Image (cartoon, rainbow, N blue to C red; front, side):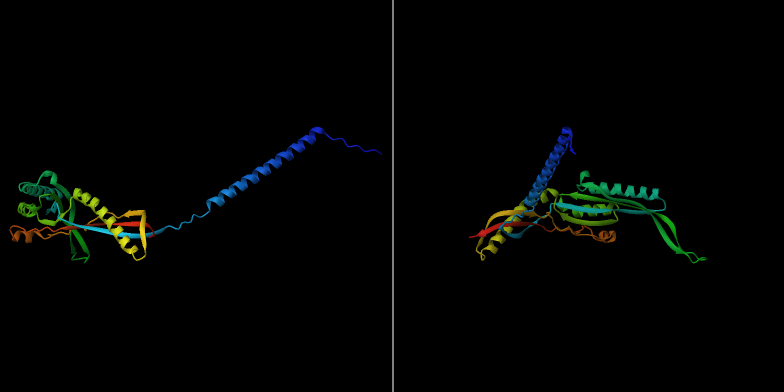
Length: 267
């Protein structure tokens, strides 16, 4: 018996085309995988260097005469009502401002430092219950101002005139550097600090038979000066006892630092 098989040409062509596409897809995926693998290998390749460095910190300090006088003073008034305390305080402060202006202080040299209104309580023990309680006895108004002036010899006049006009608190009196002078000193000290760092590095490299051949990094610290300390901080009664309050200024020391990483090589 003869058996024959009939092949459909269209079906055969379709199967072969599908196999070819599958081969192409696999080849593309393999190529993409290899390409990504190569890229990852290149990115993870470490970079080595034989660069030699030395890190040094340089400092620079300057002693300068202050050019700014700062005085903080004011009035504290207590009364039964907030309005009465405020009115009395305002009248006293107006007299004080007029008094310090009369000794040469300008309006733009005066600014409000602090202003508060707060209740005042007194505590007592109730006779019957023996409980401790508080009673509102009045209100206190505190008003302080700050005077900043370049007239350094006016400190005694400001304090004496303010106290004579009614000021009952003087918080602080000190001499400091103006922002303009601080900026000027900052520019000068930065260069000096870097030069100091270079000199230190050169001295350290002499016994090592090395020299500076470049700069890798420079890191500058914030320019600063020690906070001004009050040269006067006393109560009203102490001021009233001595006419002509003596006030003295002193030099301000300012400093800055610079960290420099130098690239070095052998001589």
